[in-house]
Length: 337
Image (cartoon, rainbow, N blue to C red; front, side, top):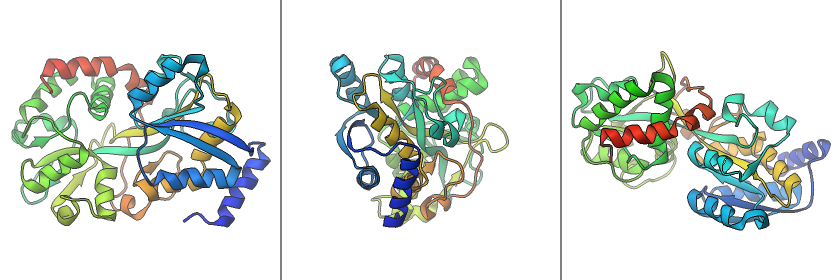
């Protein structure tokens, strides 16, 4: 828990860098977690900067920024996937940030090549399985294509950004042809047509509708920390695999943000991004929402640490973004609904 002393230390640290300020910050965010309220209030307590927040779906917020143009009041755009934050950049809605703090704390592969956005938290996209029915769970993403898993797999739709991200990452690692063949074989192994969110994939294991599912880790970790209907009471029957530990590592999704191109409060916007990379904020991403910190060396919440140590895919997020179009085409050609 963050104390008044640590908040004071954060304010002193910001003062030393010239970053502390009074005023306001206009935030557009597609993060929809109630626990973020504390994240924002602690920033205001530490800096004196008031946050005015608008939440919505990422595509809607991007469209709003486009419509507002140079009159947009937004200072910072936050979203929960590489696809949308890259789209905001490609549409000219973000600007480059010059920050020694962000450069020092956020690993290079977790930030945009032009410093227009930075990742602040991560979620591993891994495989879950029914421990009672699956003796030899898949060890890699590629294994999902094996005939032995026919009729066993639950997974999200092709329109979901998490699906697009993992396929784009595989394109970067394996090439389009191999990934295309993989996608067709995975479709042949579906237990049901893609439906629902990540928690619904875990519920599919509990209900017996499927034996294997793909989900971001924080949905399962959340079910370990508090009651999640249809998952928590049966969590003991669910096993998990961090895929590809002998080669590329487990795929990671991110939550990230950038400074809007016409930010009226740019200095405050940069201060906010630097705050998100602070130890206090990074710990809260883990403790409050069961995510992995983006900054190395920050401790994990018990619900996150319970899943164990693993090797993460360190592919540059820009490489994933560059292959999204190919991923969408592959999914369509595979008949992945």
